[in-house]
Length: 87
Image (cartoon, rainbow, N blue to C red):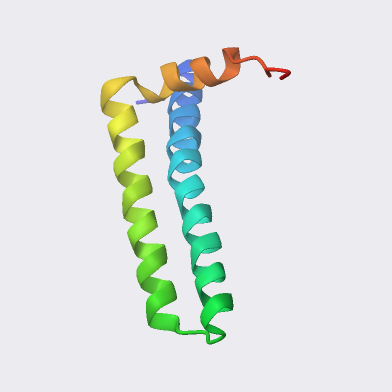
């Protein structure tokens, strides 16, 4: 059964938005683990791994919560319609 191009495009956008939400929290975890490692001046791999896993799980939770509440394609449209604000 062939997939229609429009359905494939919607699925790809949904996957992109889901990964974008999830990985944004992973970046926060990476920055936090870098700052902690710099503060204690030791690279402690178990703590870095734990911080990254916690933020990955939190990002997955937020992405899935967004998927269930708003919908990933609607969230993408909302992000696209936002204008930059000059303060």
